[in-house]
Length: 390
Image (cartoon, rainbow, N blue to C red):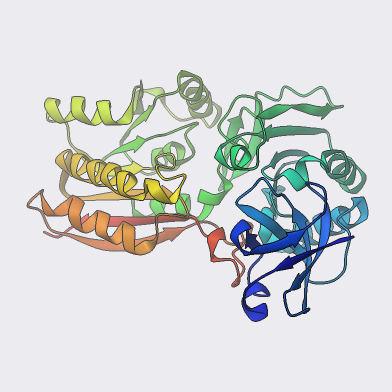
């Protein structure tokens, strides 16, 4: 293995899985190669994947002198799955969460005996065949789907790459079933968002359901209805809104699949901000509003514009919130910290002339979306439930 020399405190470098390009002194390895990393003073720091074209030049996968080959990938997948099995009785969870499982840039979600993977680093891109072989040898899966897209790939100089890698069972991968909380959902693994289903919101769906007691609920950015169905178990009526016609079609199927009466739900294919404007003019009010928007901040420089968008959502949401109503709002970007979101609530409620208190904090399900203490960047999902003080 080639060597990479980095500058900076060895103690600091040993406590984070990334080395940025500005801290790289020397490396003659090929792009995507495994390298041994040393400080300028000669201290061995670990083994990493090298990408000279990325702002993250080195991604550690071991603090020992290890190659990242088929056997290492297989061992890490087995270890990562073992960590999750103790918490989940059913096979629906995230097996591999990138740096959190020492497989930097690799995400794997489990759907029964099938898997969806997402590759976000060049080092994993050139190891795709080893990843697929490891998954096959460990689980003998019914299917493996790849959904590799998004901003992270572009930063690594990679194009989008999605498709079916194997489907020996011949299953309809546009209607794969996920079981959660006594409900079942159809998920489209080929055209749905990201890796198909948002396992990271699992615990938050339970929390929000516990706060709903009758009334009218609005699920904004509803996707395939994971929050919608939870709300239908407790509310009198639910509005579900999403800009994707495909998502709303699947949501309707999920409502029928779980035996809910269709006269208790109203669905709209519409932009969320446009819908808030329209409903505001109709004077329609809601007892509980759920807002789970896509990421507004993919880069650090997006933070201010993202905060403005969240403030708009909060203030417009309050305009259609009943007296004593409750609202849940989320951010799914590592760049939006708790202090940013607290400012959003303060500024978003201030102009309404109404007083609110925080009922609950929400965050990703850490059981499968693990956050190592030396990698706080792995925490990205944050949310609040607020209630009007009357």
